[in-house]
Length: 304
Image 1 (spheres, rainbow, N blue to C red):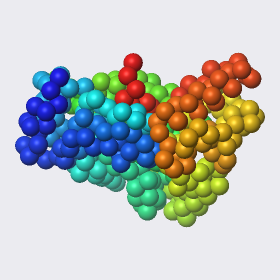
Image 2: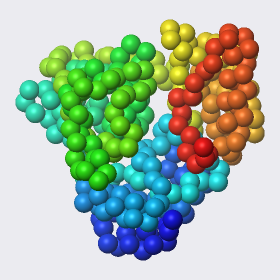
Image 3: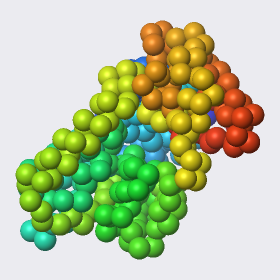
Image 4: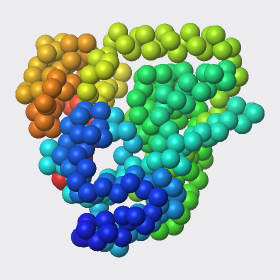
C-alpha cells in the first residue's frame, strides 16, 4: 500500500481537494477522530473515477463518507482514504411531474426545503434528519413509520471497474436502517417521486416535525444521532432510560439527558470514551431485558 504514491498521482491532477492527514474530527458531527491517511473530496464524476482507479492500483483501502453525521471515527484515525463527494454531486433538478433528482452530496435538509417551496409533498418526515441524500439512501433513513425508500424511483451508483449502474427502487430491499444496495458501490444520485400538495399544510407539517425534534433530541450538541437501532417494536431510548443511564458518563462522552439513545460529546470526548459508554449501555439493556442492542452508528478505523 502506498498512500504517498496515491497522493502524488491525484494531487493537482483532478478536480478534487486532496489532503494528507486530515483529522476526521473536522469531518464528523461527533467532532471526534484522528487523521485519515488520505482525504479526497471529488468534485466531478471524472475525478471520482480517477480516485478509485488510483487507490485500487496503489492498494489503498477507501471508504465513502457524507457529512459524517452517523460516523464514529477512531482516535487513531483511518489508515486509508476517505472519499467525499463535492460540487457536481450537490445538485438537484425538479421535473414537472413531481420527480426530483438529487445528488448524493446534497444536504437532505436542502432537498426538504426546496421540495416544500415547490409545494411537493412526500419528504416532510425527513425534516431535521442530518446528513446527505446519499447517506439517507444508503441507510433508508426516516422515522419508525416512514422512510426514504418508499418515495424513491431509482438510484444511480458507481460500481468500481464497471461504471454507472441504475437500481430501480422496486428491485431494492428497503429495511429498517438498511438496504440491499451493494456496499461496494458509491451512490451518486437518487430520483424521488413526490406529489403536489398544499404549501401551507406541508410547511406546517415540516415546522411541527422540527419542533418535536428540537424538544426530544439534543439539538446542537456534537453527536451521531441515535446510537442503537430500535429492536423490533421496542424503543432503545425507553429501555436505556429505564436502566437509569441518562447522564452516564465516561470522559467527555455522556448519555443525553434529553434522549437516552444519544451519546453526546460533552467536550473533549475521545472515541474510546464513546465506545465504553456504548458497551456499558449495551450490557445494561441486555441484563435487564435480554435484548442485544445493535449499533446504528458506523465505526470507522477500529479494525476488524
